Amino acid sequence: MRTRPLKVALLGCGVVGSEVARIMTTHADDLAARIGAPVELAGVAVRRPDKVREGIDPALVTTDATALVERGDLDVVIEVIGGIEPARTLITTAFAHGASVVSANKALLAKDGPALHASAAGHGRDLYYEAAVAGAIPLLRPLRESLAGDQVHRVLGIVNGTTNFILDKMDATGAGYQEALDEATALGYAEADPTADVEGFDAAAKAAILAGIAFHSRVRLDDVHREGMTEVTAADFASARAMGCTIKLLAICERGADGRGVSARVHPAMLPLSHPLASVREAYNAVFVESEAAGRLMFYGPGAGGTPTASAVLGDLVAVCRNRLAGATGPGESAYAGLTVSGMGEVVTRYHISLDVADKPGVLAQVATVFAEQGVSIDTVRQQGRGDGSGEASLVVVTHRAADAALSSTVEALRKLDTVRGVASIMRVEGE
Ligand SMILES: NC(=O)c1ccc[n+]([C@@H]2O[C@H](COP(=O)([O-])OP(=O)(O)OC[C@H]3O[C@@H](n4cnc5c(N)ncnc54)[C@H](OP(=O)(O)O)[C@@H]3O)[C@@H](O)[C@H]2O)c1
Image (tube, rainbow, N blue to C red; front, side):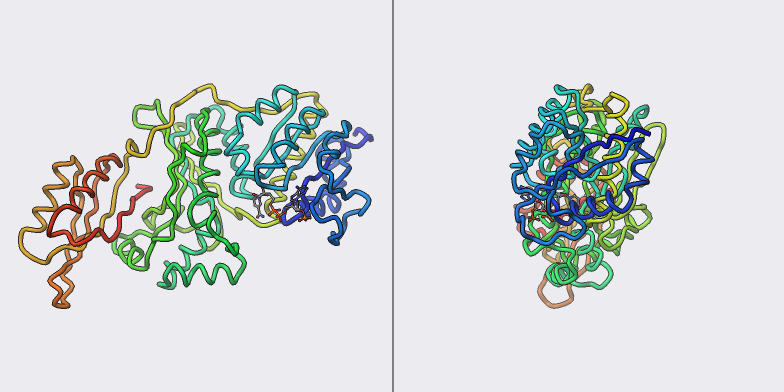
């Protein structure tokens, strides 16, 4: 084993960074044996230098992250600051000064992945970011390496623990969205401002990264269709249960039917209870991959938290250090397929539509005609009078697979019918 240590700088020492530093120290011998050389923590950049950081030598702590990455003697820089800047500039500066980079930054990778990969390749360095998608779950490396000989058709994932916790509570207890969110906040599963999670921004960033890797194409964050889960109601769960389904916020990346285009989207969807993802409870994450040769694979585990996320960061650190010692680099960006990203209108799936309609003869036929005119085939219809003297009924229509654009035109036409008092909910049905 080489005795001269590999020098590692840690940018950020918060929830994830502090655990990376702790495990690097407590398992130093194991890491050295697995890498083939010891690793030395050469500096730790933070915002608040006076904060007490257990197990970190205060002499290593600096607020000047730029000077740290410009030292020129670093082998690896671990970026766990988060956000776009200064993380982006620090990463490219690290490459320019000869270091490889491990990052957990989904926001940055989803926004600027191609430019960062180009910078890494230009300097002959590695850029690894397993922790950016689904925390501890080994996912990017399996997609990039283990499935490199296969053709992935679809990636279906629960990639946000906060929203899965909220939806699971709603399902299990009959709670409404706000009540379940309050519980998630009280238990520390939701941030004070939960927007990034509940509006699907976090999952959309992960979907962009997943789709790019799975389909060897560039998928930008703006290419991902995003709908949050704040409108999901207890009534939606009741409807889902009646169909033998639950509701999950899913990140879905798939090849189009013609095999040329790909799509990436995040939205709540009904999922049959028989689907493996339906059993993913609380704040766990899971990703279901369908590929030509391997068939159906499921990756499951903790999608966040300091220690689980540090596991993924350290796995990358070992891989990058091994490459370094071998004088090689690991796989970089693979975008050779150049598949175009389809708009949401072209996505084909099934739909569950709840309508409030006048409770009188002929309404069902009128509604069915609108679906037929738009080329959307109906699978089942369930009508239930309210029995409250309002003269209204609930009509639940489940369609066969249809293009999203056709469904949108159908809903537009339904809204124009006098007998349709309102469209109570529209939800896609996935995983069948
Ligand atoms: N937390 C998770 O469960 C999780 C899971 C997967 C991925 N990630 C990703 O991991 C990254 C870090 O997340 P986190 O939860 O560890 O964040 P965090 O707890 O907020 O920690 C951020 C760290 O960055 C430091 N920092 C902020 N601005 C800085 C600057 N300009 N220069 C130097 N240091 C700066 C902070 O310093 P102070 O300590 O002085 O404030 C802090 O140590 C993010 O990209 C996040 O998306 C997190």
